[in-house]
Length: 39
Image (cartoon, rainbow, N blue to C red):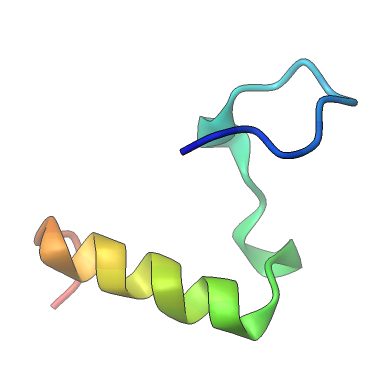
């Protein structure tokens, strides 16, 4: 994943899930399912 906004010094691990738009949430859920995090 690449950082799209460079205004904060936080890593990409610190993404606030609640601030993501719905399409990004679905995309992230799919990624997590692929890794077996969600069932």
